[in-house]
Length: 330
Image (cartoon, rainbow, N blue to C red; front, side, top):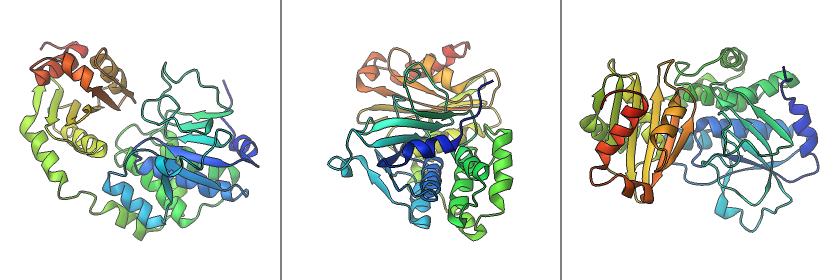
């Protein structure tokens, strides 16, 4: 059995280098909390770092965690004239070539992630790699503090715990023993009022339109519920609606997608042990787009070129692809 990666190795690698901590595109609370926790941990060893990302901050919960703790994140375009090829980049909550992380100018020397490695990113040669199938990436960062016997600040502990709770849907999805252990560890350091504030009022008025469209358009085949949102909405909102559809008694696998100017965005959820959401998404979108993720949650995209292949009745074609990928009768 391989030994668990030691964060001390990464600390040694990063000394005397310019460090960037890069989240996946359109970062969520788990990615932001993990990057923030790692950044603060590095400072304990005199290593400054910059958190960066690409895309938008399009989820209220992401904006709230940034504002609550004064976290500075720099967009890709802000670093074009600053980052060099000699700078070190650490991929957090993602892996190079994953499809959801932009290839920036720096050298990706490490990946800290809780998503499975796929064929597209299996060949990356990192100096440090900590890939573990846990409920949240924040769990990995919290374990670093515990392993080093460094007490996290209230802000760091609160951000990490919030990230874990958000990515595991309040400890109801994809949790592991490590996630539970980290909850107990962080709970003694958090600011309860700040955590409560983060968890309240997490839906914006415009989000109701996405809920309404998804409810109007849902179709159920056996245990799978498929719905679409006929207008552009943030990635995070598509994921939230997929969780909502999964909460229906009749639904054990949910597929939600929305239309975008550049194609279609998918979010897939599964609560069945015999249905891997990542594998299902990849199989259903093969030949027209791409997708993947965890056994319980996954995402996918279909570019305009792929949408054209679906024909005049694209919604029926999409439903047929997912239903048949599950081995059900369409």
